Length: 223
Image (tube, rainbow, N blue to C red; front, side, top):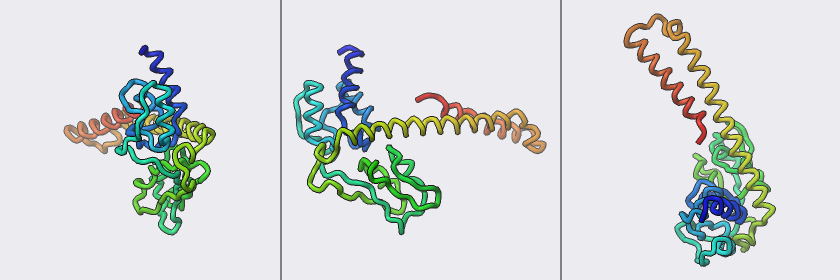
């Protein structure tokens, strides 16, 4: 398989995935799993949200034999939607940071809520919550896999994930640039900022600033 054909296969596999971004496949998102499948590094049976039908879709695309879902990745089941208990939410924002499709609304020390129509049921917000106030509610009854999800929902979830990932990388880059500029200013005015420090103490403060500059530059670097 050429690099070009592998890239095309990865694109088609990604199009066939439910885009819940749940990481249960063992990869950080659906795109990474699709790439691994196309490269022959991952099985086609590692996506519980896609269920048995999802395995069949990937089998047709890759030419590999269909096989049962790998129980190590989880079981096929109804789709859930995250629900936040308002009485226990402390507004820590950790669930917001964990949500791959940015469907949790709230501010620091303010009560959060989930936009149910946008929730993929990935459950990544649950372990992120320090007060255990998030649970999944079954919203599809006995329907599982692609019977509990639609191509339209998958396309919307994919678009939201791609935008959320882009925005978070942009915000992190801009924050790193601000930190780098601040550290550079401190380095330029180090004698005045150290209140007459000399010798080893001045060297220590200079090393602290240089380390801060290095961290900021590393955060700016593309992954």
